[in-house]
Image 1 (cartoon, rainbow, N blue to C red):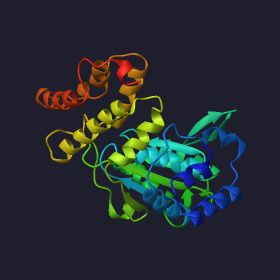
Image 2 (cartoon, rainbow, N blue to C red):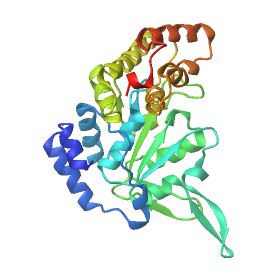
Image 3 (cartoon, helix red, strand yellow):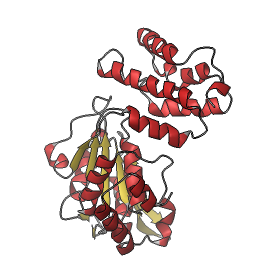
Amino acid sequence: MKVLQYLEMQKVNQALIHDVERFRENYPVERETEYRVIEPSMPFFGKEILEMSIAALLQQQNLLLTGAKATGKNVLAENLAWIFGRPSYNISFHVNIGSAELIGTDTFEDNQVKLRKGSIYQCAQYGGFGILDEINMAKNDAVSVLHATLDDRRTIDVPGYDKIDLHPASRFIGTMNHGYAGTRELNEALVSRFLVIDMPPQTEEILQKIFAEAFPDGKKEALEQFIGLFLDLQMKAENGEISTKALDLRGILAALRTIRQGLRPSAAIRMGVINKCFDTFEKEIVEDVVLTRIPDDWTSEQVF
């Protein structure tokens, strides 16, 4: 799908579409990073969120996408990199990610010490879109790099080497879930370097578009039951009746792919949803919700 066609299908403001086209023309991708410009496997649906994101990025702002699980944060980030035609660099934060992984580290090559460039360095050099996944898991060493990178001055000092100015097309998109193990609150200085979008929960209308896009060969009545299952689980998670472990849109989509392969729906949904609950009481609640939507005697031919 072409970018222009996708944005028009989403009914994005024509002025924004025009400015995106001009951005792509002004900043062609360097040949060595063309392989990083990837069309997402799943389009993001949501006109208002797309317009907010595009307007911010056009104004050289960085984005922080927050919200509950399964609200499409990473899907949106991947789509934005593709919309702007930029190479994307995915950086998943965890306890072992520090300044060396982000900026670079010394390596011995051709009888001399050289800098092996990290993801942030390459993003700054080539005008990439850096997707900072689970940014609220970053440790202090990594946060100090982000402070400099995301600052309005758009300059990074590389210790022992030189400073680098960020390419004018470089942007950074952070994602974060609240309440995950190992996460913490972001400090004010870091948050101030972003424009923040709080991603809304999935709606039935958006889910219908997602499922129709992913499974055009699926039977409408059957797919509606899987959509209803997700919405039922989402409501129970919002009401605190279950955790978000079973609220897994990726899991339901993956289960549907195995059903298309010929697996029984009850077995597929057990792998994709039920077995992600490790608490016995919670698993029983989820099983009850599943049975109201996906009968145990369903076959794959009743879904595809």
